[in-house]
Length: 264
Image (cartoon, rainbow, N blue to C red):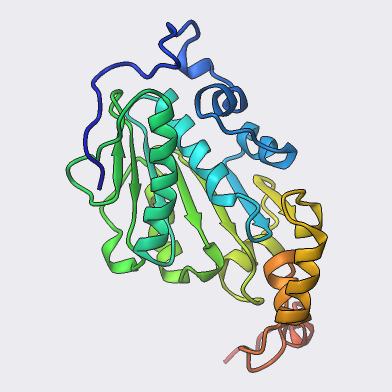
């Protein structure tokens, strides 16, 4: 996917590196080395040490950009680390890896692939960022994953998600999901709404809290797309979007956990 990669230590403006790579703060790394200025909520994501994170944020907030910065920081600071990028399609995975490649270029290096995977980045320290295809049957085979990023997670099949999670086992890797909602279904919704595990770090940013999106644009989108679509795409709301046979709320209300099954 990419051409060449200088076999030298990453640098900034020719200056000699004075701090150890593993001690680099992710926010300062993004600002000084990647030339990316994160906003306050993006800073939370970069600085988080959570093993499990979910970004339920408006369109155009920068989910892919902050994820790419997190991926490059991990690969740069931890030798021989493997970062995997999954999404519903090859093109979407490649787009996030391309963002990472642009950031790598700001380090003074020319990105190249790892020689094995079409969508990939290889670092001088042996670390890799690999973009995965969008089918469960073709993603198996990776192990000891340090960081797994699932972009547009609400549109990734549950089977794909279940095939990816075991790859974190050996390396005790981190998992981050990024998406806008897509109805009240699937693992993204379940993790956000019903998974009570303490280690999930949840970040919700509606468009009304993103200074990069004007109120005028939001109002025009609300009128054009309608309230249900607008609530989902821009406000991070999990709504019944018409694809379910029954509303999720009705199904959940019908469940009685106190019922004892009959002995047959």
